[in-house]
Image 1 (spheres, one colour):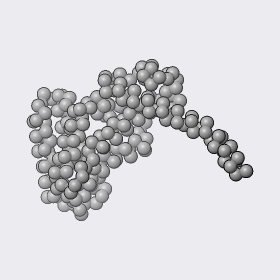
Image 2: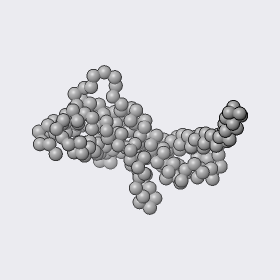
Image 3: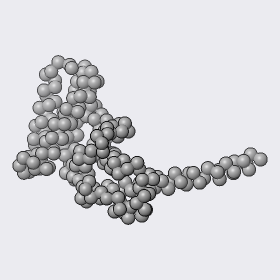
Image 4: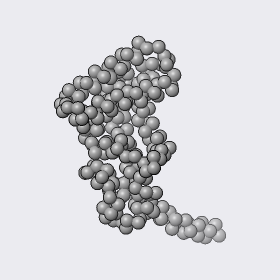
Length: 217
């Protein structure tokens, strides 16, 4: 009797499981198609009809698995953040000096932005419709990147309050991002990559050295 009941239960659950699997597969295909479209031509290249054709679904099916195109763009951004996080992960072995680790992260960020410029740019170009704030899950994805910066800062400034280190991590990221953005977008003047890398090193080393001279926040 138990075997019969178990078999019946399994068959009752199977359709729902198949539906969930199909939805997850469609979501993955749409994110992959969206990522390819953005990589090729930026956010303006993201069109629902083209995405549906690339993913092999009807246009309306997009909105069965995503709230709207903003939701899809956020998922593409989350995928980009995950790739960036993976690229910045610390290599095996003893941790380097904090300043060296901060420099490694800055150079890794520059390398990622240079290699995946359109996807990197999309992270900062996208604005949610109606001025909506980013959802909590997306902010958590961002916070994991800042945590990579906070780790060497914790070794550099062990007496600094955690909240202050979090702000410092965001300040340093903003400075590095500014240099990378101005360099890659050539908004001021063309800058050879070797010079850009040298300026990043100067910035990070000066930032790290200066922090040790300041009283705890």
